[in-house]
Length: 380
Image 1 (cartoon, one colour):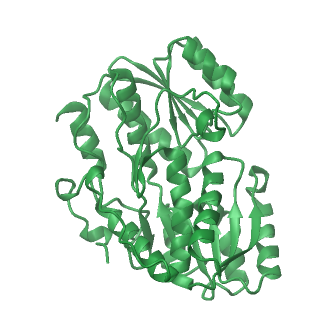
Image 2 (cartoon, helix red, strand yellow):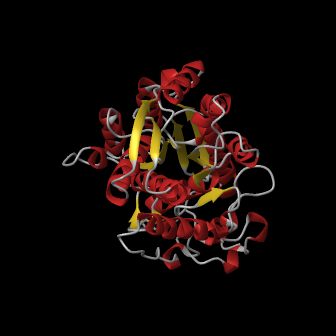
């Protein structure tokens, strides 16, 4: 087993992203063994940190426009706190803009960044498709555009021009990848955890969120890996969740799916917010929390408590939002310094009740990534 959070090594002991071990291969004829080998690696990735080299900060005096898809969600709040702290430490002027989950607001925010003569825009959860005109205006004005948990136009639609100057990179099983690749890998890992836990007769209810390209990638990754790994497994229902469902509507959809599919023995949820919006309550109300393997991600305190208390969630992938935003600001720094990007983001890490979960609170990384980034930027 990988070390628990309380046993985590210090930052100096952690291997860097380039040293991350590769997954042990298992015979193709045994999907459960193959899936378990992958899951064991995801647990072990708990001790993989960002690289310890990179360009010193050039952000002092620079104007960085942080455009979040929405600052009121847990991930949005964590992002605002992280980029504000980094800006203060490095002497950058960070401007926060709340996109309010509105495409019209995203475009207005990009135009405001241009009007305020920003040196760089850090997008969070704001994709290139649909925002091409505003992004092109920013490029024409010489503003560097960095996409964090955002998908570039060429990634979404083959043959289209990419409009981001940079994206944070992540050390993934098949090589360094963008945020889109990371979220696709999350979906792959969900399929593997379910097969490793439930076996080759998994019958899955999937909660998919196609409104955001990164969460749409989770669905694609899960479906592709399940088809390849376990032909005898089955997705018995795909519940499509839209932003309008973020409320009582989501629990109603979960209630209905659980009622219609008594044969389901697993549930795959795109990310943690949907769990606390009602899906786990539906599972508990149906009395099925002990009869199903339920997976999500990203590791917030509320969902960790649900795992600890066996209340409708068993495991999840890590999206460490503070680390992600440090990686995003590192990408901004590298872009402004004229340096190439490196895999500074998290690998695919998993937690469940017996792996990588602290006694209380949310996920705690096994490396002091803040200290590593600060050492890189300031030499202190």
